[in-house]
Image 1 (cartoon, rainbow, N blue to C red):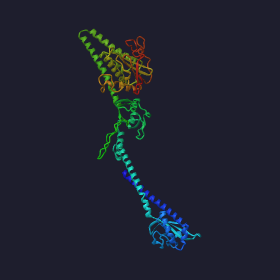
Image 2: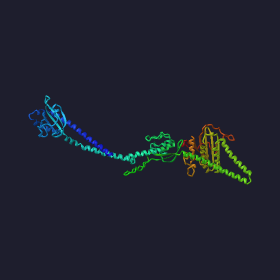
Image 3: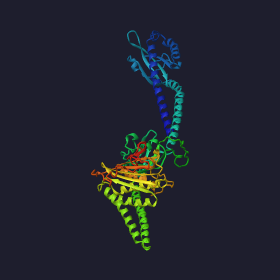
Image 4: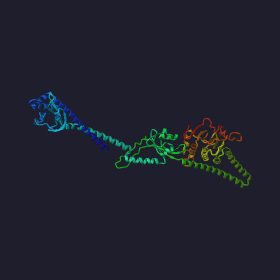
Length: 578
């Protein structure tokens, strides 16, 4: 179609050029024959000869000379009554001139196209005047149209060559453009592209997963409605790319999109969502649409087309996982407590069977007093029944695993300031990880410290394990990260720190990780209300939380002694520093 159009355009231009040249040639010929005729009409020889005895004998040779030298077809000099004095054909001399002579007889020059004895011609008729201004004769000079056509035909090769060159160049350009368009559109035609765009646009915006396309220059080329909702982006506009610098994204998400690296099921946190992100480099498909005669088109396979990222919202699943983990933690604590209680009841019953009632009574009373003391300690300091129940169960669990659990608390936690499930999730998962770390150490000790003061609740969990490399602080808070030898599994403890991070982020707090002869996790949570107690003193008068828990070398376990390597995980999940 493009080639046909080019041929039509070139033919039209060539015909226009030919007609234009023909008209220009006629106008030029008209001006030339008029000039020659006027020159002859004012020639003294011609003026004198027309009044002579035999004008033909004097003027015919002269006219032949003018015809040959002036490159015209005829020069006819005639009397007022049209009688020819000269003519290219001798037999026409003396006969009547064929053409319009009335303007010349009235003293005016005239140019016309007329069919005479030599055929159609362009001729000029000019009057010959005597000294008094009277018309004594007329002179006609003309060029036949056949001569003009021959002259015009000489220009046809040039016009044809130019037209063929234009067709060749236009056809070549059309072919190159056509191949380029087929390559970049993978062989799809306009109608196919229209249909594909309609289908893909509908599919893009109906997806329940977020989809983001980022080019190599860091521009959001395209994203669907779900991605806009998940990341808080402005309403998507397929025609206007958006710079990554102009949108408010979490630091980890911005870094991933800007890097263009490959990501598989990475977890990224926004302020209120947990997102699973996959990212890969965009590449050109290997082939175009199927069809007879379709050209096989292959992409170059070289990265450089930007990246495609998909987002899945796992917030609801994560909340359910958190609740399940909380219930699992409580269940494990209760199981350990039940197991411990069963052992003690078995001991009491055996002592009774052996007739040692006094020893059985002393054992039961001592066990009851120890449990009551621990319960009373927490009720006095942090009146939170869920935390109290959890810690009593964890104490039994630690005893069962041969781990010494030291717990201290101070301050008052007003009712309703924090959700009990969140506290259980944070404390339970941190204690589980501390137990696992301490189980392989020589000391086998875990410390738990709770401080409610200055509008904050500070939970510190320390262990006697190997500690944590500062470079790994941020990584351990990602979903499934764990320093245990067993691979993480759904619902397993590899998810624990991720749940802690999610809860702390949602509550507007932060987590600090220290390494001081073991790992120390310090969670700081803001409290609503701000009406907190001033601390509960120990029996010896010291503040219940003032001294912390000492190490074997006498240093403060929770004092954060000089030289510790610290990593802080902020609300967006980034690593603030080591």
